[in-house]
Length: 314
Image: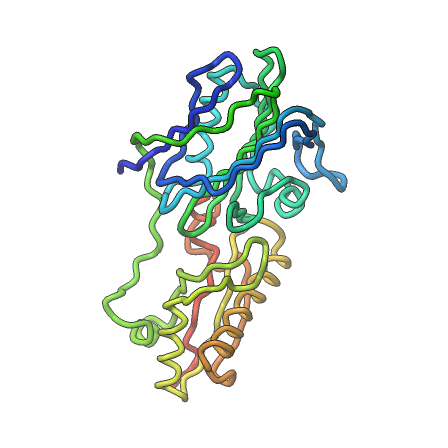
């Protein structure tokens, strides 16, 4: 399929026409510049209680983009940017993905712009640090790439000379992106209640959780409204909300996280939709019931979910 790509024009040392590409309909969400400052550039994974950082000085610029509606994985977003930096004389100092970076610990040892400008999924992010010494003053770039269920996110930190040029407005072109593996097919011609009684379980794929949190994000989730209506019309029915995770991290930690997320959904159904607590239970199984392999970003994204299971037997 063809996916739009944004060209972010950067005036990099020795490469006046350099550009970085972003797939999708990207929008610059924030940009902050500091005329002269210092920055701890992560150049190693979380280990021994901390992250190795290179102390660099110069003009410091933080920018973030939200790539609305992209189906590109974090690797598909990062790869062309890496290639272009290398072509423009940048040397990659360090690169990692969520698990090899150090997951939660690396993210919270790294400067990240706040939500909603930058979103980081603790199980699905990539980081790259690079330097260029082709100019009179060294320049450093840190890229952090992540995604939600609907959008991609890119954060770029640049540290360089006093005349460091801000990122220009993007223009568009197109590139080929391999489609993300589709979720298991569901028959949406029937309502949630009908599907639940037919198949016994339904994945609530529209739910979103705050970064690194078990709390369900604010929002009017259609699946919860439909589930609440079904339970109100069938007061004898009982369901269990079951949380699932990807395989990043230990089983015990993932089971706890998945159960907390399922409990958050139960709490929302009770507090917002008025569902009787006697009709609801919450459980978590961590990564023990995947619906895709955890070997790719796409698979891990599909595995992070909450499902509703009909537990009534008559």
